[in-house]
Length: 252
Image (cartoon, rainbow, N blue to C red):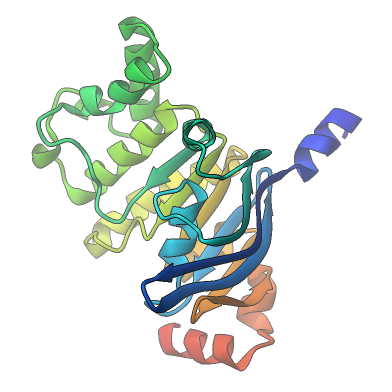
């Protein structure tokens, strides 16, 4: 590994320091401090309402943090709209509900942002989109509308759409929880390939098989706090915290 590769391998892509978020009186995120390095795949898990989704939504400012620091690829998240736009260009997000535009074809859904935000000419945007549809295994669906696709296919289009902006970081917020069981694997396979390609990823999920196989680190959330941070091996085989042990005993 040369010096440049070493720097890249250890570069901090997401830094959170004492991050807090309130919704009215409800203290949803309570002093999160963590760092995600370039190329790491971090799985965030824990009970419903523990602050997992809020945590990743704050990373690209879908939810605003009220205290602490969030730095993404060297840019601090502030109220400055230019900072927010710079960060959103580098961060792709895939939601639980696919959020595709129903009146646009698959191809139009994927090419819209690169054409408008990156100002790509139509032929470049189309070429990249076809490559991505190939990568997620559904090139034959390019001219269809979202309503003509299965849930698993729609989620794969959503992943391709996020990748079309060529982000440095991908955030996934329970990407398989709205899917029928037989469609979950096709989405996880795409995410696994993405992880293997070196993409920096934070994934909120209850898919523990995926977490065990693909993640570098796992963060257990409870009541807005990270209660445990460890490798999959440690989390599954030797969890340190009683709260982690209890949660895993209920879902495994």
